[in-house]
Image (cartoon, rainbow, N blue to C red; front, side, top):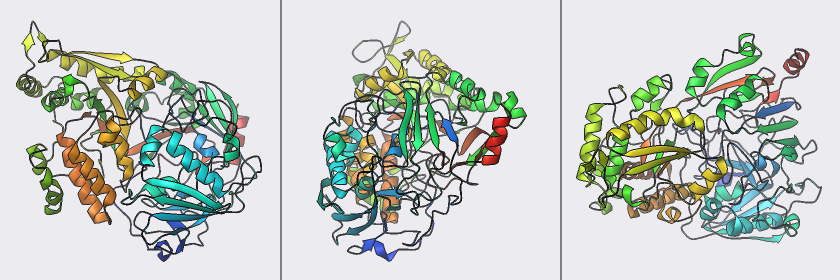
Length: 622
């Protein structure tokens, strides 16, 4: 990926191009005891499965895996951390904290949305699908040896709903309550017409120790190491620099089917750098061992250092079959100067992707059109009859374009300043009442049209410079402001920006996770990912159609209808995507031949392992 990297977000999950054929597991029928759950009841793995197909069940344990962050969730940052509480709004949460907690269930990354029991050994679903009764494993333990019970799980869900990060609070809206009548039984009740994927989201949330938090405030940023129950515990750390996680060698869940072959390293260490170039130099010096490369320029020109040439560092390009998601400059429509969609489209016309891709990114990328890029939920051509059924109630409320061919970003001549596109942008601005006076574009209120791009990484400057130049040709006074990660997050959470970059990926089964990004409610919620401030009744209604779909066919139709309305809103300047994972690593690891289709990233470090022979050879070479 380019310098903005993959901004995957917990809760949306990972998608794919198409849905494989899965044999239905009858245990997921309402009223029956089930070893797993999925949105539409399909499970690949039977109750007696031994391990997930994509892991190496004989992977050796041991060794060290170190990396820099490439994904984030909730309050996490790519460049820094100052808190070990990664589930609240305050502070910058450390990467990897999810490895220290055990959820009720975990994802199978070779299925669209299936989950199988971890802390919960089974679940029973009521006929109306509003009550889920989880039975917890009696062997589940916290790291201090105390028993993990249903009461801890009920406390965790109740606390997250009341005091968790705003994104968690939004996604738990349809969870009515969580109760524990005894240590083994957790009963979770959902609201009528609850979002389809909320039970899965609930099942994947961390379980905290009620006893620990009876003495600690949950909602505060803190460097106290929380009591966990997962495969790792927090080890050594230095704020803003690194954090290590130590494998719990007597972990109670190590031999369960859902964990066999995973969590193999004795130490997982995250290194933090404020500057990408410095981070790359750190990799060449073996300051960390694994790197997924998100900058095409670096991948094309800088992997010629001695360790690559002599084979000590391996380079691979692994396939990425997940939906590529949405990446672009999101336009803050809360601000009056961006209210008119013609102004927003002018901003789209001014960006020359073809020149940027060829000149700056070595032709490594394709243009993003849709938040469902690279999936069958992305639209093309006129709407189907089924889509029209969903869209007709909004005729007159949404642009007429919604009922025709969907909007796609323009293709330039690659010159960097395509005069045809710039003339179209000028006309759009004039039609919106933004005139030129003394070479400056004026807003309808007579003030100069100024625009600031907000980023937290200096490496993004080359991608902005030609765009800013084109905006200047239109008479728009555009500038780039690079701020430190803490200030960036504070400003974005307060929606204090004109335009900023974000990336997120859609799930293979979109549902309630769309609300934090697109709903009117999230537009007014501090800390939400609705950066554009989208507040559209049509989009709200289509999100409900997506959430309420009873089968995958209806889901696809609803997503396509949503895609049309979203694209017609011109809420963003779409950027680019890549269909592979370029990775480099110091040659002391083993890994599955291919990452599972629905995995986030390449399955590292979860499914990788230390190769004893390679590690010994690397040690001798020091």
